[in-house]
Image (cartoon, rainbow, N blue to C red; front, top):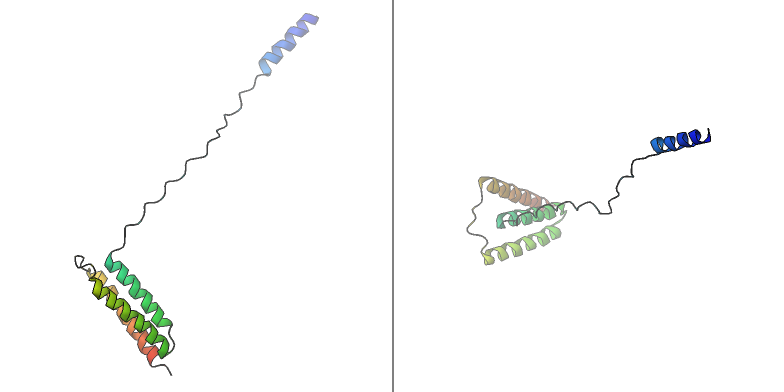
Length: 119
C-alpha cells in the first residue's frame, strides 16, 4: 500500500506539477521613433512675408506716434537691406503670395495711420 501511495503521489506530481516556463524578459529598450524630416528651408518670399507680418503686428500694437515712428524706422532699415541684397530674383511670387503681401501692407498702413493720428 505504501508503494501504491508513493506511485500515486509521484504520478500526481509529475502530471499536475508542470508549469509553463516564465515569459522571456527583454532587456532592450524599444527603438526610438524616427524623427520627423526637417522642413525645407524657407524661400526669400516666405521670409519676407514673415518679416512683413511681424512688422505689421508690431505696428498694430502701437498706440502713439513715437511707437509708429520706431516701427517705421525698422521697416525702412529692413527694406533698404533687402534692396541692397537683391533678394531672390529667380523666384517669382505667385498670385496667392501677391495677395498675402498686399493684405499685410494694407494692415500695416491702417495700423500706422491709426497710431500716427492718435491724440
